[in-house]
Image 1 (tube, rainbow, N blue to C red):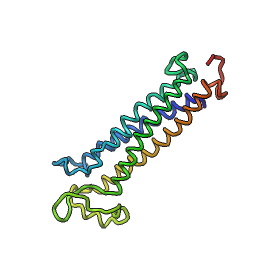
Image 2: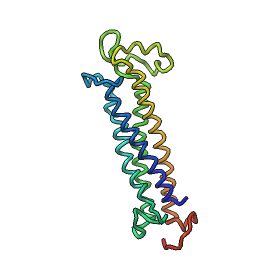
Image 3: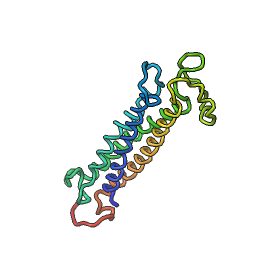
Image 4: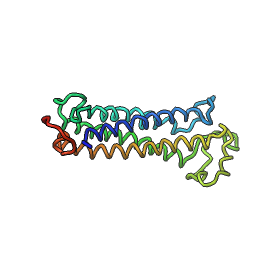
Length: 202
């Protein structure tokens, strides 16, 4: 597969992942699947918008750039053979780094939230974080420390875990595109790398 084709494949994979991340972050605003009456009762990490900004918006732009690096003739750049394949591939590495940073932001935010646990109504009738250093992850009996919102612990754990996995996959794909983009920058178009046939010039 030529470098443009690889980039298009990566872009096509990043789009649904970005949508999953965006949706997961939106659902975090409805703990337990219910509308909360006070936004201050939401976990702080929900407001960091890791899935919306990191895995979502900052990932859409790189994905669209990757998708535009290959057209049907295998050697075009955004549908225009003359626009400079090498420059386009180099530009894609910059967008891949941006995407990596966005996904990394979502990954770190999710990991912190999972370790910290959700904000909830505790036994002393105050809102806070009843768990310490992820102790609730191995002991479901501790989940009863959260009285409200109902089922907030599995809700937050599931959604932040999804964001963690999505962010990890996105980072991996962006690293692959950095390598792929550098190869495309050095090789030029598909014929330079000898990975697809054709008689067209660089």
